[in-house]
Length: 357
Image 1 (cartoon, rainbow, N blue to C red):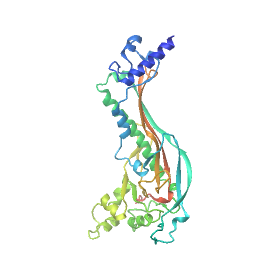
Image 2: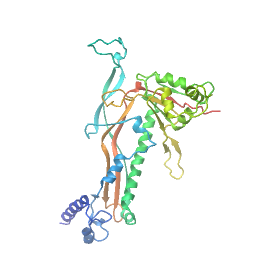
Image 3: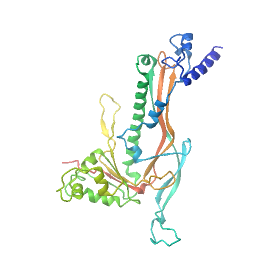
Image 4: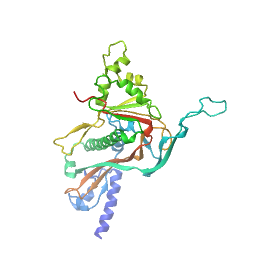
């Protein structure tokens, strides 16, 4: 009988929670239940999803950190359904890449760049975090909505920072590029070394991939060095004796790319919060990728992209087992999988800044 009563009460509480009734207490349980079981309320012994408004949902769905570039480096492609499994096409060099005839007859089809490849299967994995807030802490809040919104921003921000770190690792992995499309410089080489010409090097590597990259990316350190490099300034300002600072727009025009991405994110590489060791995700590297805006998992040419199943997930759940009077669990996340689908559509230059004296 007791179990039946508790079961019925859990249903009633859930209905009240979703209805947003004014009778809800700070912990999300109807007042009449508190009166019935006492102020503790947690003795009810059930968990229920608390009211979750459009504001919190919008925060998790739309939140972006302007300093993170993972979504631009490996653009998100939504799957047609919420299924986690999917198929994609890994592009490789094909026999039809060779252009035999550039002339087009009045009714004939023109020759195009064609890629062979392999169909593969994969699945999206969950990225998520949760924050636990005891009822005792909730009682002390003057503005619970502001508190909740801030915590959801922090949750999704940390999740996206983790994605930034993972995408940076994939971009900087030489195994994710075709033969002859990567180079790692020694400490005595790179920008700052006598005779090193970064302009000539970039022009050379921009022409090596199967499709000429239309996006250049680099870490903040490499970007600051590139925009003040004498060879770069001499190419942009031939009559200005190599002085000044180049803008992104001028660099795009010089190297004939659509966009330049600069990674500024830093991550703590130690779990000791008291003595953090902050390192830049994107290092001192420069890379170039080709991207087609209309490229999908199965069509088009691009170096890499991200498959995502469904929208970002978010919820608030009351759990009576955590804390003396229960706690609210704030949870956020998404299902994604980063994929390198065209190794021959990009290049990577590692450690492009001279580091020894």
